[in-house]
Image (cartoon, rainbow, N blue to C red; front, side):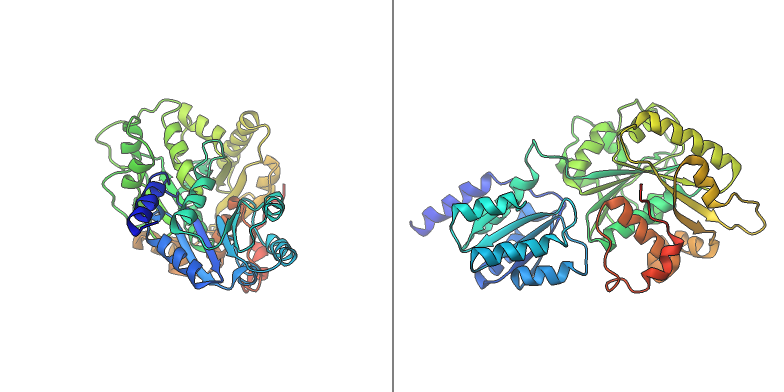
Length: 418
């Protein structure tokens, strides 16, 4: 085939490849040719939203890496050698893979039996080397753009049971920790349109955000969403609230439904900062998300509201996991408080984190447009947000070797087991 014919064939192949959503991909190569293909894929426009990291070492390097760190959305490993050795190595790698992680294997053995064995073990695709850039990108696209597959993203709603209890601050820090610690793509939507603070907390002032997304449902797709998302860092994007009172925001029950579906289709983790209100759309949102995080202060009014909220969530979500409970602003000087364990016991829940009242730390972060982990990454509260991120993400806890000092802090955070 001539160079011109090869170019046209490649162009035809590329036309049918969809853009890759916001996923994290880690590729472990053995050969220079595969390394060059992976590096070329990074530059392709279809991979613009994805984060692809390329290393050498094949499966052994992958095992060494993920024995100490959470796995990305997709692992790509190149292998060479006998079938038995490949199967054994993949079984060892599987011990460190988080739920939901997909695996593509690139090998030099063209064997239908091997292919069937790999698929039966949960491998998503087996590619025979040498591969092309379009083969690699196309294989990734097939995994994440299948209309019959489950949505890519998990939706996590943070809801304060009483105004002023700090649910937005907890949501913003939790989302930031999830993006940084797990190198996972996170999109945060600030649904408090008149008074939202996410733009201030992340030091962002975008011209467009949630209001534009829900005001033009006929335009809302992944391309439009990309344009109005504000990038906070490598792995965190923000859909900000307008935070103005020039108009009223009277939403119907399903106003945000299409927005959440669109965000789920392209981002592994969607964090929702839900305002303290009770109307049709708030109720519908809390009913339909994957995880609910309740934030409360340890006083009687919060307890009453939390009890009402938990009771209605039991009715709305009878087959789902119980909500996570975060106690915030604990140990305010001279304030009579309900002990967090007693508070949680009255709700039939466990305290996931008791965040102490630290006005200097939180005030400094708010005024600087920073997260707690940026102000003082070694503070115990920063570690609480890291562990909260782990529990809501469903990802495996990094090993103690990767996170020194964690044992001493576990007593401050009671991870949910039910």
